[in-house]
Image (tube, rainbow, N blue to C red; front, top):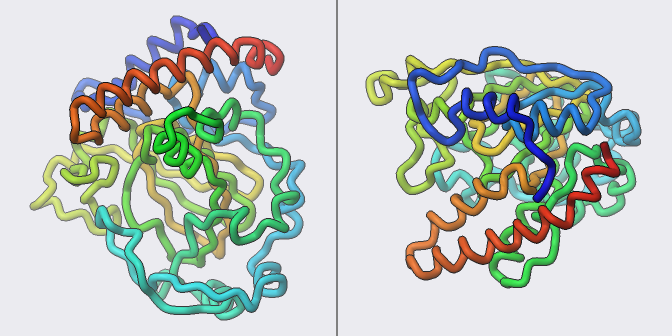
Length: 328
């Protein structure tokens, strides 16, 4: 067994109707903003409650806060070449190939001239340590809230190990004013997401799992919504009129915890640089199991996946008891 989950936390999770769309659910209207949040308080009030929170000052030890600016990337990596989509649609295959080739210097110039009317493309979901290994020291140590993280560990089944290890990669996002993530979604494999703002200001729009019935997930990709947040088509999607978003701004040096199955998207208010980390542990392992198992068309593979992941989670929960005590 892992950390004991207080009864108050269980009641809060039930109130949020985790994973179920119910009209009588409690509506989540405002996000907590905390400072000097202890791990125990985070664990009980947010991690196991599956409730988002913004933590101020969580990145104060990072060199990135004083080094990383758009101009820094232009100076240090100006000759780097990559292709990036100029326009993206909120479709299930939004990671489509192709796009325009840029050098980093050209791209940063585009970011700095970005406007709401003519936003720069979004350099997003880029694996930090693959592209910028020299910057690893600038984002260490990771906040303790990101641990334990079972995604990054060795798993006996190869395809499970590859999928979970890939999901554990630290990712970088750089964009300009008016740029936006192309689709309302929740993170795949049932993971938690930690978004850490290094530079600039970014607006987030989030919805709890209980509002999934108003958000029209794509049939072929259930964690992506068909809704265009900026221009919702209420004739096609009338129930979206009942959805209640929570909107807030993430400032430099702040960490946002987006729990498993929470719908979210973002828009940049200024040039912006963000780091993301996905995690899984005892708090959301069951959600991960359900996500993986339901995507297996073969029922025997689905059953085997469920059995393996259940055992893997039980062993890690037992192992993590001492870790949790040492942090708290």
